[in-house]
Image 1 (cartoon, rainbow, N blue to C red):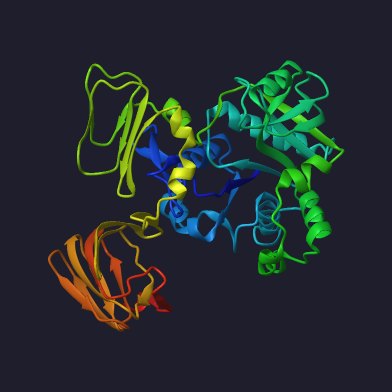
Image 2 (cartoon, rainbow, N blue to C red):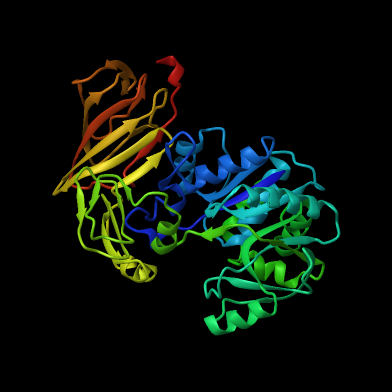
Length: 441
């Protein structure tokens, strides 16, 4: 089974745990079978591999998310990287071309496309396999998954099927309606459109050629910024006559807001938190090293991270986005392919950061033109490369790099350091990368 997972967006509705760099699918709030917290991305990826160990999973995403994906899934994860954001049709066309030209999938192989962040159980992935098989039959060019509505939602588009069969032709699509209109659609047998569908690889490549004139994956990648911003629904689905919908009856939740996310949480508290016995329906998600105490509260979500603190009525939390858009906040935490960093303090002309590297990883070999840096190793051991010279480093060692000096560090064990940045212009854009043969050190 070929699966394209759509991983995009900034997910600001889950602020302060999500931001422009850290999208909602990377937040670790679900316990796996070993009792370890994992993210939506990790949960869905592992569920796919459990349902079909031979599945080819390609993640369609932006450049900003690549490091976090490698951090959570490893460097072997197959990723189709969008050079810039261009909505779902260009993203799916690029990922399909990636499957054909880079992964060498056959043109008549079925492909399933689905979002990376639904909360689902094993039956969902069995349904994806059935969707793939149905697409392979060539009864339709496009086969959608229609989700049996749990309530008349205003958040989703609707698919109107021709009849009540398990798999049938699509009669019409409906945009996100009012609650009253949604109720009317459901009485007509309408299904939620969850953005899950399947097709033969050749079909989308032909559509991409018709709409863009692309010649290959590389050609599409290089011209990506010129493509129109258009959704897959508008570009393809709503214009396709040979289209079917397959009903899905199982659990399916879009965890796009704090309200829906807390409904899926198995625990009331993640992190350092305390609820007194007068609380009900309260959830605490705390990434800070300080305790959060809640007393006598009802139907409240409390979330704390280096980015900020949210205290909200659960229903009101759905309306968070315009308030978060007005906040100008430096990114205080991010996952990288080599580990993560957390900003501890920001001052005038100085910044202090805690950097954690995984065993066997290293930063890019890089320099900064407008700031000096000091590293203080607080745990683990490794090798620093400073202006081409190797230095073994251990706990307590202090390494100083002046502006313009190339540097990196290689973690021989899990390694933590405190980085002090000093300069009049401290910016993430102030970074120049250099090629280096790490094996030489």
